[in-house]
Amino acid sequence: MSTRKFATLFALTVLACWLAIPSFADSQARIVRLSQVDGDVQIDRNTGQGYEKAFVNLPITQGVKLQSGNDGRAEIEFEDGSTLRITPGTVVEFSELAMRDSGARASSLNLQTGTAYLNFRADKSGQQFSLGFGREKLALSKPAHLRVEVKENDATLAVFKGDVEVAGASGKVEVEKKHSATFDLTGANPYTLASSLEPDPYDDWDKQQEKYHEQYRTSSWNSYSPYAYGASDLNYYGSFYNMPGYGMMWQPYLVGAGWDPFMAGAWMWYPGAGYTWVSSYPWGWTPYRYGSWTYLPTYGWFWQPGNSWAGWNTVPRITNPPRQFAFPRPPASPGQTLVVNRSTVSSPVGAMQNRIQFRSDSAGLGVARGSVRNLGKISRQVETSTAARGTVQTPLGGSAARLPAASRVSSPRGGSMPRSAPATGGGSPRMSAPSSRSSAPSSQGSPHR
Image 1: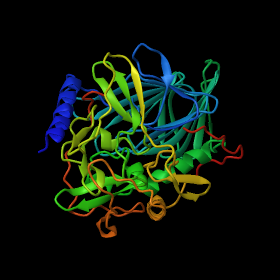
Image 2: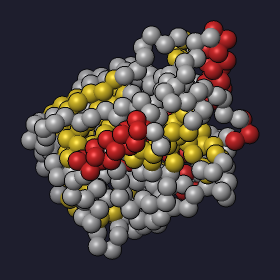
Image 3: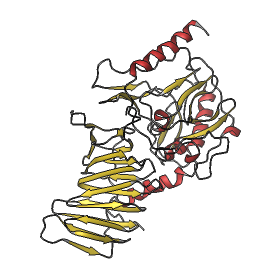
């Protein structure tokens, strides 16, 4: 091993040790993912610093609040793939994100104002999920898809799928599929039931996001991970490859020869957990929380899932980095936020489609989820275009080469991973430390079918 490479590995080891904070792996804490942010969305991370700008892939922990502005929308993914989406003018608090002694997950949310969509998938773990609004609370144990709107004097629950029971100041109220209930928050009248659903301008947006997850989540995620959150984005923005000597590894599309996984992101401080790396890439959840990043000479950087999912990484694990690779360092003192942006904005445009520019080293940054049908095809076009112009750069410590098509194994439209995929563990993720502007949807929205 060369002296320079040994020094690099030693520096990374020292950095990892310096960042090591007492683990939350034995606690009952949980994390969920802020999976989409459009427009003005603010987050109070319960650090005592109040609201700050929110961005994709921030870990959501117990006590966190989200607040959307006049053009803000956001989505939160839970471990089983359940989602909560908020529209402009909404405030929601994550009152409880915990693990019971039995191993069941407990989630309690409080919608303080505005409109939220909840798609609860109800896996077989026996989880407890509740959503409070006004003076009422609904508890879910079976799959359900619903919308809740909280105004100053009333709150309306619309149920698209499933049957929901609400309990509170109005007593127990059963709301069936394709029915709605309006609760008087002033106490003058308990509630009124309706056998129809009033449309909301954001119904179509909610349906579009759900369609994206249904199309790209597929059934393959459970062959490399016990958790569904982040799976849709991995399938849309990249592909798994069967690399000889390494097994199943994932790489994003649109990566140039000089790209590395830490070109865009931020160091965020979480009390009791220390600094946590938060990736800016739209797929940047699972590959930074679990497994490790490995550099393969000639082929570049890959994420390897690994076999342990009991806890999650605050500092991503790295193996075999190139000689001159420089891992971004966190601030020296606690309580700060440090944004890292080493992206090459001057890189050539390799392709254009739907008025979207696809750059050779973007790794999907700036590409909205579902905006093009086949991002893998676009990526190959970009490779061809940049190679023809002679603009492909040699990576640090390696050379550029195209992955053989035969090694690609994932499909965004369905199917399962091959049997050679690495085995996974069970349990639930416990904390071991922790855009673009939104365009208003059409006002002629329609209720879910």
